[in-house]
Length: 288
Image 1 (cartoon, rainbow, N blue to C red):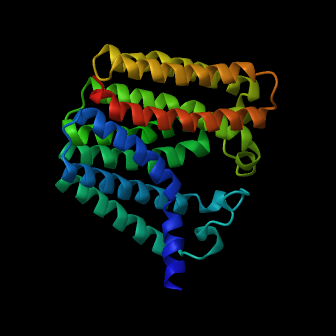
Image 2 (tube, rainbow, N blue to C red):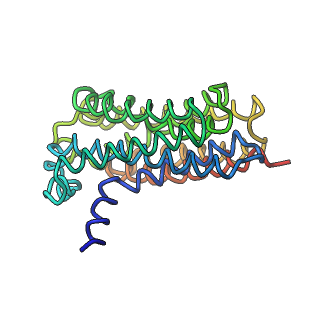
């Protein structure tokens, strides 16, 4: 019984989102550390930002419990089914947020703690409201999603410099085709919940074009990490090749695949890109 309750609360925090964003936070940390990482700061950063993200996910689940009941993929979530009460969810989210913030503050620095709280606010409040009212909710969400990588970077650097800015831009840009692709193959769910996503507002063809444009921007901005000396040229070669392959896949299948199939393929490849990116920015400064 206890293990079942633990599993319910564990799932409520959306561990998949936490793990995915933790990878980018780790990448940002080691990019700034450049081979001179503090283990204690690393642990504090990773645990702290993971708890803050968990807090945001639980708050998000609480706010979305109404629309979750309308979508096939979310209608079995614990707040919808009644396995967790709204009051318990709010208490849980608050405790997670306080613990995470304290760990970031005491184990890293004030800037990192502020960035974590900024990401929390953007995700829970601004994105939580924006996605219900505007097709630009995805853009707002990309700001919150870009924060973990910057948190990892600033935990080491203790300053928001050009490297932090480039990380922020790259993460925000990557998320646009990633989430537009999700919207393409899960359009029925979003329509059922009356959430205005780009495919339903502007159409599938416009969404495809937006995805290709953002991938092109990612290639261009990505070169700046190497040009400004943050990564090795081998990083530039590998990442440019990966993202170019993403672009080529999209172009080749543009007219051959149905919208949901094309969207799912672009989504899956986006996961390859972010994994490769996080690994390469972590090891890039160590290359000779």
